[in-house]
Image (cartoon, rainbow, N blue to C red; front, side, top):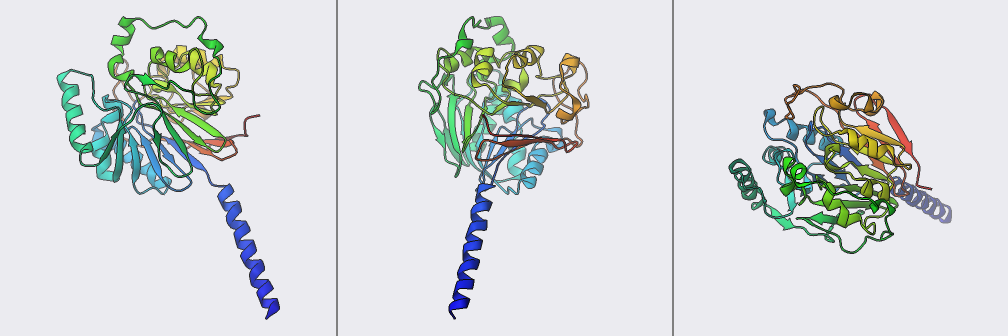
Length: 358
């Protein structure tokens, strides 16, 4: 009997060891979903809890909701536990009604009330409010946390306000603030700054791995977040602001957070601005940029096609809306607690591994 007991004990010890190894290999998975110039990024924690940031465009035969649902299925996610609507523009909020027909959404988080006064924008917002009122809804402010097991999710900007105290491991003086130039009013109004500058932005930490997703937070609003001190700290993955548009992603932001990899959720003719590529090129820590689309206007500034999930130009020249209804590809990030991560282009299966930050 003693031999049997030792044998059973050994088996139990082995199983516990394997379980521990299993836990150490668990990942945070991020799916940067192609909604062709809109925004939809799915975070899935090791516990299986999910957080979706934005829902893409409305219409197009439920195209964007279907693409989000496909990514959720690939991640074995059957519901969206937390939906962050960064702001109330159609390319970020518009797909929500189609989404709830595809997947249950448990918690809605946003910055509260739109400041857009146009009839079309107000009608779309009021329709959204009727939907969120049927769910648990929370207005978030800088410093708030989103409770997801295994992750550190903190709101760093919302409703035109930003963090006033730095995150842990942050707070260093930011030399990239020197010479910061604010964008003028005519540029800001052209790009709908009223809602953009109120974007909900979030930090996501997983062990040693750190990333940020900024929504459409504007160049000018990055200044109080990053200057004179860097309130975010270093990040491994920069989910590039505002689809890569030139109205966000200042040097004061990207030079200070020193990302190792950037992923841009741009469309063929929306986002992916030349200035953005030039600023990113000046970040010495940056190893690679991955794009969800080939950016037609910038030509040779695009990355090698191995790093671009969708190569086709679906939108007519001069049209920033989206018309493609067929298949598309996402960019997948799989991160480990030690700060290492892998990025994969789902179109061609090309992957690259990035070790922990030195």
